[in-house]
Image (cartoon, rainbow, N blue to C red; front, top):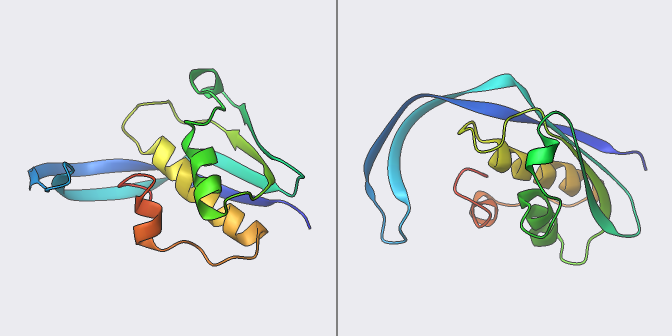
Length: 133
């Protein structure tokens, strides 16, 4: 089987208002967003192990360790699943444009396709972060 590619589009907040706080500590928001044609690129292909390779202009600002949301997404979708994952990091880290969440969502979509699985529900994706769904 060949690999799967997914664009992790940047999110631009046109307006954002904090309207309160939920009992779980998350803020309640009213937001208007658009998604750019720019983003990071997630590529997955079959492998005998689970691995993450980072490249691109903002790759040095990330680590391919257990805290990486892309690896967390893979492990959440299919514990014990294996794939070679490549994240081409074109979006700046911690810039407020949804890069990490978009990367996790793109990884979920790509891996679900690679592993012939249904995509996770919004509630399952939200366990990785509020913006992932």
